[in-house]
Image 1 (tube, rainbow, N blue to C red):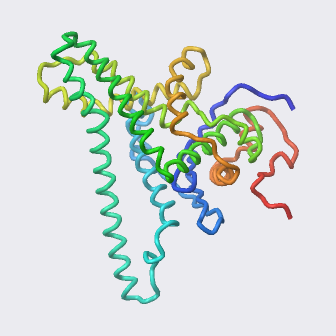
Image 2: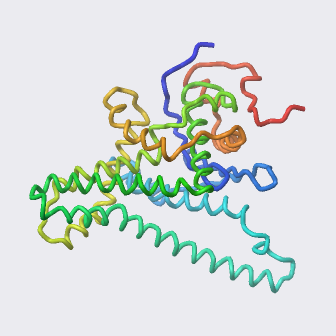
Image 3: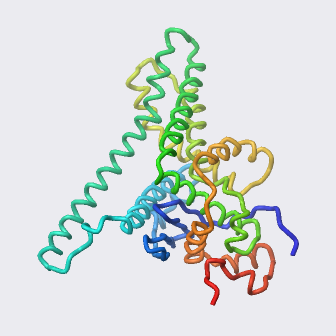
Length: 331
């Protein structure tokens, strides 16, 4: 069978979760998690975006805002689901009804606390990656009189802060495993989009880097912010901070269009634009082991018919043994 080097757009995407992978295909998503006992749990559900069914999802530069929000919402939901398999034994519900009632109240309070935590996380992210670089760059105002150069310095500081943050959290054991599952997610998508049957062997030899990755999106956000802030000038420090916050949806919309183009095109210009994001992925993805690939395959197959995709897209037919996923145990 002749190998295909061209990447085709499959439409599936996902993210790593705690000991697992979430994959989404249109309105369906699946979360596959390796449980403490070694079994793989797969949950399949539907998710309709916040702007689903409206004309907003069809307008370029506007749709990216809603897709970004959907990614945050669904990502948090998938992470919450995966974390339930690793809660302490004391958190499990008891048989006593009165205790069950208390457990229900506790769950409600826990969900509220979780929502507040995520809200605080978003506020901190905006503060650290959007506002802090501005204040740090303002230190150079007494030495650099050129406003354009200051805007570039701010952008460079923003990227440096993000890289330092990634390097710092990557030292945590749980994050290291999360990055390996992130690699497993990419490998499975690359395997399919390169026209190979999805099994452990083929996925393991596929690349862990992908142009449509969220890490690339974040880097696009930072690069686009440099360009926008380069042209936005005001003498008011307060307005500068306000503009940096208010323009986040605009930056997200532009960045989405860029990463969407990168995921569907392989020409040299797009490849050059995508290169920094792929470099960043060398930090946010790590090589997975075969067991991690097994989990990712389970997640893909729960929401995506890759056999039909390979037939329709590449016009390829395979023997039945090529279809067999390597995670199935030999009888």
